Amino acid sequence: MLKNEVDLNKIGTVFNIQRFSVNDGPGIRTIIFLKGCPLSCAWCSNPESQNKNKELLFNIKNCTGCHKCETICKMNAINFNTDNRIDRDKCINCGECVESCYPGALVISGKEMSVKEVLDELNKESVQFRRSNGGVTLSGGEPLLQDDFALEILKGCKSRGINTAIETTGYINKNIVEKVMPWLDLILLDIKTTDENKHLKYIGASSKLILENAKLMSDLGANIIVRVPIIPEFNCDIKSIENIAKFTKSLNNIKEIHLLPYHRLGLNKYECLGRNYMVRDDINTPSEETMLKFKKIVENIGLKCNIGAH
Image 1 (cartoon, rainbow, N blue to C red):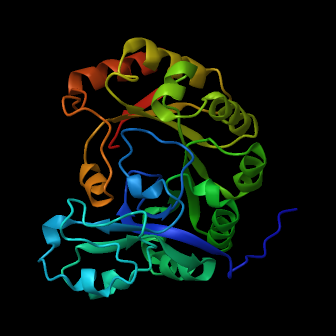
Image 2 (cartoon, rainbow, N blue to C red):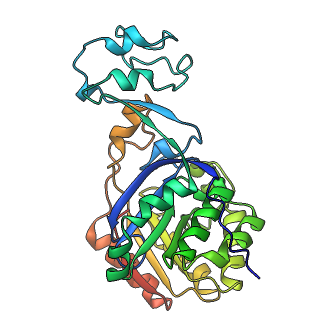
Image 3 (cartoon, rainbow, N blue to C red):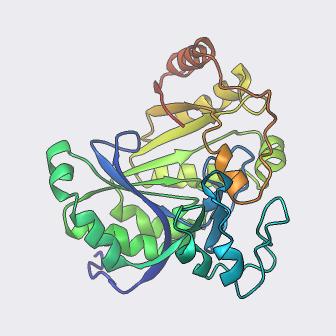
């Protein structure tokens, strides 16, 4: 029997709540983005999600040069004579500089919230969930790095009759998979490649656990859609797409793959974090012709295929 009590006091770190999404599950959805990710994809469009702790972002385009932040910082971590302005080794992400930055050049990514606070936010969208057959999607980062927090949010949603989904890398302990699955209506599972060497080189971790968890989820009867970010010079080729599709076809209960073309929309976030974007400037979004070719390959293997936004 499932334990229905919800721990409303459980605390986690959220870095964004995005409303009115139509790309991350059925209907109109609210996405709760949780901090922390075990992978290090070079093309990640949410680099602020990777670190589990709060982080300070600095957008130089919004800076008026008033120097208030430099004056107020007790750690002497802000210096206008340097390119990045912020000494990340000294900064403790206290947020005092953010409070003094009226133009919004400084922003803290990551906010501690209780399950109750998250559910109170979701209650504001209850009418749209009901009218659109939508719901809530947990994302990240990897939301299951904060597994206890994620679990209580999911339980709270189900107790309110809200449809639940999760976007996951699959790179998580198998016990966590088994723990959260009863509370999920949909799993959006990233499978970036079945090539172990490529996975290690470009993502910094083995693909073995992800593929094992994909099989575990399917064997347990989960409703799963496999999502594949299409990245030039990584998996933007016929062999890669065929291998992912054949692996997906071999699993139980999975009938659909979404192909997500690479984009550079997160580039500014790297600048705000004082980090270098590791994908070359000459790497471009795959053409429509290429994406349609890959779609046909997936369909010929016997799976439904959609091309969506990444």
